[in-house]
Image (cartoon, rainbow, N blue to C red; front, top):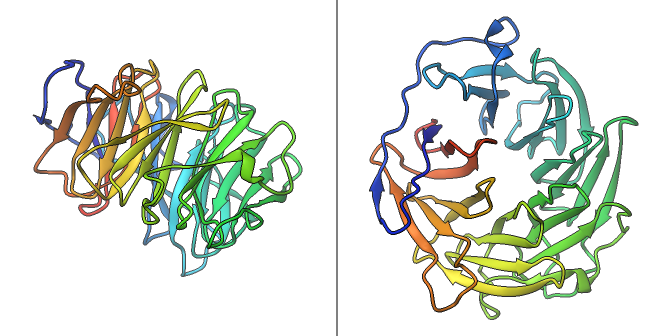
Length: 332
């Protein structure tokens, strides 16, 4: 994983970034270094582990959490952490499971069976509910962490030429709405009321993202603005970001980035910048104060570094001072 300081210069393009060095190994649950934080958690796609990066000490090599109770087919896809109680949740595609882990001790506490091929995952502010998008079973699972139960929201009744394939998932800050991307040829973003979750998602709660006639838009990830009024969808194959008005569920703009194979989108706490990674190793920086004006180019910077080969995901630290990029080609 690379850590960089977001550039604040509004008119520069193609800035080279020097990743911060990582050294010194420690392993959960023994290390006392986990008293500081905050941390970034990166699940492995090939091993039963989650790497832990201490953002207060970027001179340290990531620690390791070993997830127990997994099968040999483990294929971790995503992770989310509860800011309320420090519980870590990891989606395992290979076993159709979400693991609950005590992030402080590294102990695996519970394994929840969810739908097929779980992808995007999020925890509500209370820490009482975890939401996961199930790509292959056309649904979203809701985990009640107090009752240890799982219920499902069905996407299969949506109209379209193919079954919906839920993938990216994000919540608004209050945890009252979930936004889920459909990566099928129907290329939609759907809104779910989490105050009273429906048994089935209705067509009226979804909107087509990407170009209307582009069945291969492939909206893989989504992020929600801090005020909850906008959702930003990264369309992987089309190479665009769609801005959605979350109240009306209408498209405000579909902005082409000039790059394809997009992987992940993150929004700064200020709500003024978005960062979009791609498989070619660069990160596009968008000015969200002007992205809705079709006469303006929202791209204000492109972060590139020879050490970064393929960005798999991006995130911004809670204080907005660090941009985090996972490079799955180089395992860093």
